[in-house]
Each structure stands twice: as structure tokens, then as C-alpha cells.
Length: 314
Length: 314
Image 1 (spheres, chains in turn cyan, brown):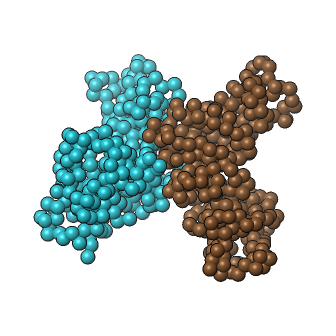
Image 2 (tube, rainbow over the protein chains, first blue to last red; image 1 turned 30 degrees about the horizontal axis):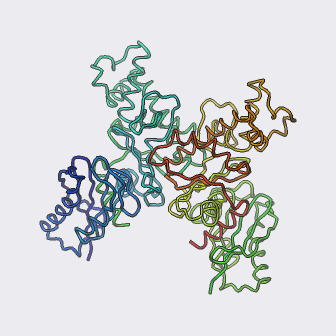
Image 3 (cartoon, rainbow over the protein chains, first blue to last red; image 1 turned 180 degrees about the horizontal axis):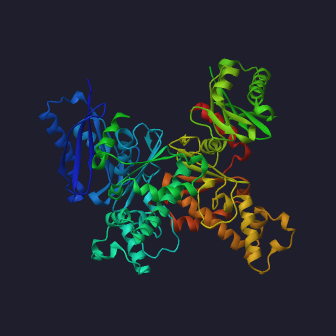
């Protein structure tokens, strides 16, 4: 009687693990360190050992486990093969076959952002939807697209990499990906700081944002200032909203989602983000794709383990 | 022993029909007029009657027919319901249930551009691929996206409507969709004429394109002039390539396809289009999604009946 499923979210410093029942109730969660040395060769054996320890602790038999889902940073195709995950030291190999060999269980694997999107669809901000775009506004901008309940993996596992769509010509600063003018350069936490720096330099208008050491300028500081009606902060939020709103408008025109679920550190600013994103979205999106909800992500750092568990249940 | 399938492509003036074997061999094709009067109430009965006549003519029994696939212009969801198809006079109803009721056969229906994309994947320019974006450069710009062998329909049947992604701020002429700055305003046959008109007005440089009545200016004339090294025409082609190349770069970043298949009247210019599209695509696309092929559509006006047939075989 299979009734349990494990969800694993491999990060650069820790691996998060969750034990779920098959309805998606989180029964237990814990972490182990990520050992990236020697090409990350210990990561999957550590995951397997940790799962086996947990099964022993809870007296769970192998035939009670449906399988193990795993998300990791890097391009991972629909068959569970990863193609170089720099942060983990991994080259190219089958996560599915390796972990399945260690545990003798069904294993599925996917890109961490895509898997987190699946988690938000299953139990988070997009619950009940089958066509969803998850947008993670963190240090970078990540994304995951769910079409008809399934992850849009793409040909080389790079589906939903919306942080690097080109939104601005003539940008002089180079994005982490090597291009210029990527959405990430304006809509990530660091991108918002870039917009803030530029706005503060371009005017001598008074602003709360000036009354602090420049190195403490953050996305949070900007949106806190917006909430206090700071004119310069509002101008920065407008720029942010223009880039992100137009970018999401294009994405909506391509995949016609039911909902955008916005997560990551920047989303802690709350619903006020939508006040700046939506007007630009509404103005530019194709009318046939305009009817989209905007919601905040609700699972936080647990989205990855939820989505990984769901991966096996599909 | 089911071995035949019918593919139907409903257009504003004629309905194209094809009889295929289940391997996709086109055995016969023919047309009937599209009667759009009275809310297009005759269209599906005419389709049904035409299929029944063909079955009689070829002595095909009903149990030998796998089913009927149909593509039509308008938003059609994954269940085969159309939501207002202005060109046909249709309101909202289930094409699948109506036609299936008339024929007592399995019926599937989809948006014509999406269905044509499926046709190009099956037997056309994208043969052998499972992740494909079809781009139709005609009077407008249409599109269809295939993910893992299946049509990306989207929430309201508007998936792949790439002609209306916003690519330019500050455009003063309004697109057919009511917005401004849509890809269609620059990359369609009429869009290219718009770019040509603007280029000719902005300079007095000599050009082959001036030696003709302005009303005969066409996308074909522009690319013919490009092939003769006409400097103004090349400048127009560059603009066209910039808009389309950057637009396709964004689309690639979202859905990570294996191939773009370019069809429609403009594509008759041939491979020379790619010389203008690719440099802008390469410059702006996310590197993880850069490895995309560009091919010309090969099925022409038959893409719709091929794709419709494939719809039933899935």
C-alpha cells in the first residue's frame, strides 16, 4: 500500500527534504548539507542515506513509498538528466537513474525553479490552476511554467527561464548570463537596487533612500519607502513595474496562463507590487490573454519539496 | 479496422478537407465553400455531408474511420469549444460535440494556427521535432506552439498568439487587436509594407522600390529588391529582422523550442529571411535556449488539414 512520497530540493549549501503523504500533507521536513566537492559526488548518496534513515526512524517500509522527486539548480530534461549544474559541481548524468539505483525506488527529477512552480500549483498560490507561470524575484529572476498541469521543460531543460528574456536595448551593464538588457537586470532584488541607484543619481530630489549608507540600499528599502509615499521610490517602483509588467504581458501572449504566482524575496513587499506591474501588463498584453490572475507565492522555501513530491505523483 | 482519418481546415471563404491514412499519407483533398450566414450554422453540417459523400465515393465504412480533426480561426480550448469566431459568424459552442453528433465519430478541434503548427511538426518543416514554434508571416502574424508533441492551447485557447506580443513602445499606428507596438505591426506582410513606407519617406536615397506605384509596394517587392542589393530594401529587411529576431528570442527563452518553422506568404522570400532574423536572435536570446534551428514551412496551405488529421491520431 504505497502512501508516502519524498520531495527533495537540492540547493548550493543545503538539501531540503520532505516526507509527504500522497494527498500532499507534509509530515516531516529536515535538511542535510550539500557537499559540492569532488564534482558533487556525495550529494545523491547523502540524499539516499538520509531518506533511508528517515524511513527507519518512522518505520516506513519500501513498498509504502511511491517514489522520490528531486529538484536541482541547472538544466534537467524530462528524462531526469542534468546538463552541468555549476553550483553543485555536477557534470552531465542521469539523476533519475543514479538515485533510483541507490534507493531501488521510482525517481523523477526536474529543474528547481520548474519544480517549485509545480509546488505552487499543487498546494500554494496557484492551487486549483493548471496553466500557471511562477516568477521568482530573488537575487536573480527565475521562472517555471506549468502547461495543463505539467512542467514545460523545453528541449534542453531551459523552459521558463524568463529572467533572461530581452526587455531593453542599449543597456551597458552586463547580466550574469552574458547578455545585456535581460528582465533580471531590472526586476530582481539586485535589479531594483540598480534602478534605485540610477534614479538617485539622476535627480537631487529628496528621498528617504538617501538617508542611509548606499550599500544598504535594497529592494525592501525601496518598497518600504514606496509605502511611505516617497516620490523617488515610487519612480523606481514604476520602472520596475514597467519592465516586469511588459515582460509578463509578452509571456502571457505566448503561453496564455490562468495565473502568475510571484515569489522570491522581492515578493515580501506584498500586493503593492501588483499596483506597479498590472497597469503595464494591461496596457500591452494581447486582449485574448488579458484575463490572468496575479497572486503571491505562499509556500516560500518549501515550494521545492512540495513540487518535487508532486513530480512523482503525476 | 480503423485506418482512415479526415482533416478539416475551416477558412473564411472555403473549407479544405483531406482524407489520410493513419500514417499521414494524403489520399485525397478537396474543398467546399464556407457559408458564414446565419451565424455560420451550415458550416459543420456541410462538413459532415461532404465527409459522408467522400466515404460513399471511396466505399469507406464508418468503422474504418478513426475520426475527424478540425481547425478553425478563433480561440478553441482543449475540449474543442470555440469562443466566438468572428470570421465564421460563430458564437460559443462545442465544435467537438456538434460535429461528433452529426457524424457519430470521434472529433477533435483546435485553433487553425495551432493545428497548422502540429501539421508542420508531423509532416512538414519540423518533422521529427517535438518542441516547435510555428510562425506564420501572412497578412497578420500567427503562431502555434507544440510542447512535447502537443499543442500549447493555453487557458482560453489563445496560446501561441505571438503576433500580438508587445515589441515596440511609442508606436502611433494601432494594430488590428487594438494595442500598439505588436510584433504583427512590423513582421507581417502589411507590417513590412509599413516599414517600407516609413523607410522611403525618411530618406531620398534612390531605391528600386520607388520606381513603382506606391500601392504595389509589398513584402515580396521588398525582398526581391534585397536580392538585388537595394540599400533601402536592405535597411527595411534589417528592421524587420530586428523586430522578429528579438521577438523570437524572447519566445525561445520562454518555451525553449528545438525549431522555429516559418511559413505564410512572407516566407516565400526563402532562406534570405534568416540572414536578417538570426543575428538579432543570437544577440538577445538566453544562451541556454540559443541552440534552435530555423526552417521554412513546407506544407503551405495543406498544413491545416495535416495537423487536423494528426489531432485525432494523438
